[in-house]
Image 1 (cartoon, rainbow, N blue to C red):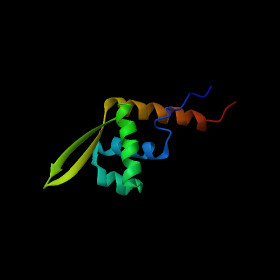
Image 2: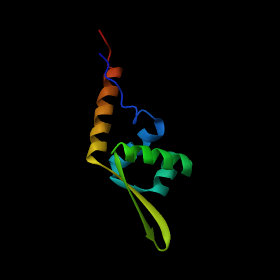
Image 3: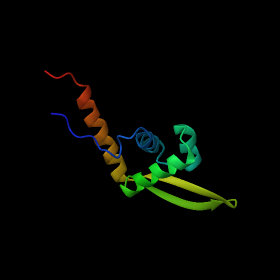
Length: 96
């Protein structure tokens, strides 16, 4: 039987964000914006949803008098990504 896919990660942009963070562990907002080709507003909304789910942590600080937003994947986020990936693989296996 097919397992339910995590609705938080099933969004294309949120999945892209988590995929990037799994590989780099942490990234600046501008890096994520550039890599996902998302607008700043949409990226902010999706990051907040991931934070609310406990999948990422967001740290806001200043660097040379400019605001800097750092996003980090959490252990819960890594686990959710791994589970999502395993469940997707089940969809791709031929059924008898």
